[in-house]
Image (cartoon, rainbow, N blue to C red; front, side, top):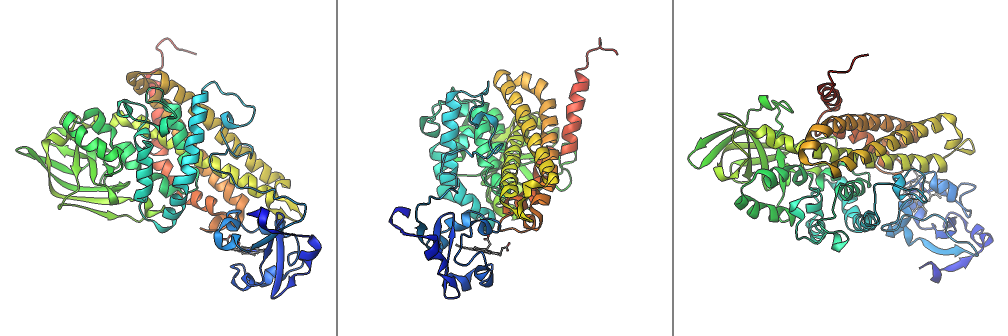
Length: 516
Ligand code: HEM
């Protein structure tokens, strides 16, 4: 488009510097703001100021707006030309591109850095996944986060086409025979680093509610079916969910009891070939739009897990939380719901094992997405602190700001290295080894990442100041982050419980031979 636009000299632009005849240049692009001035959300008079009207307003503009403002079609069309002999310097990331901002990407994606963990195949996969998320998912993420609606079906269908929903469950037999990401990786090659890549990419939009709205219910609620459901149940339900035709939520926690499973009150009573289920569930991610609920119930001989289909006696009500309703967080009521006994997942009374099987993977997933979101905050802060001018100098000229950046960067880099180490172990341990050796480290890392997240949210808010408090505009990613950072510290195991689990697991492994 720029090629067909007229070229102007700075002197020509300077002539248009008053009400009714107002031009500015921003990053070598010339904008005619004559009519727009009265519509400008920041007011008209700021545009007529000295140093703005008829001038190169690049610095003033980027002190007040995000680059995306200029990309919105209604504003992009204000551009009438370019400055002769100049080229635009500021560019958004194209689909699949990696950021050149230091620490904005994990080191394995940074120029010249090496990693022992990632192969050429992982690199190809990362590029394909980033392109897919930027092109297909990001527009929906931004919209849904704002309007609170469920992820659109067209996006779900496109995710299903590349088997994204199946890949989100991790490596395993459910991938067999599927073409993954248009053949970028085979089901046999797909490992936890591929899954880490997906989790990293999906959390990069500064839209925390949408991260859970992106069918997280299935990620945590389908594995019990794959591991414990009868072949008939699997054959009926799993394809519907992995193809995005039906949605599923994991329904364990209640207002009466969170992780304290012994306190659960939802009860299932046997009546012939059916369970009759009565009770309530709270904080159920994706519950608002789920068709199936992998549900924990109290039965005569203990805790039992079963798959419950939405029907007349099952109601869901949206719960207002501090993140976007696009996550579909629900309060669920079961009123004598009749559930076929064939829907039981695992042995009756042994539901704790069914749920526990899934915990490490769920917590690891939360670590991946929480860390990715934290890294985005680091990038936002590095950009802002460099472009924001105070007393004639960039914010980075303040030592106190640099100290905050140092702390933020160190936290994400430390967590990334620990996460990649754990992911490598997951690739090389069988299920029993993972359960015995990694529950502790995963608990500790989850606690570390979420504590770091809270510190980073505070630091980033100080860097952005008042802008961190507004839902739109310059600090919108920071606002979303500090408003929602606690979700990761609570979902899938509260921060303090996770840290304690790590130490308790270590205590179990203390050798009797050890003495000071
Ligand atoms: C193509 C030119 C421009 C467009 C399309 C534009 C558009 C906007 C938009 C959409 C907002 C709302 C906030 C946001 O979404 O970030 C805004 C706010 C604002 N704009 Fe502009 N603007 C332009 C140029 C400028 C320039 C050159 C100045 C220089 C002083 C300016 C000063 C402001 C101010 C002071 C605000 C309020 C910021 C805030 O609330 O934090 N704008 N502008």
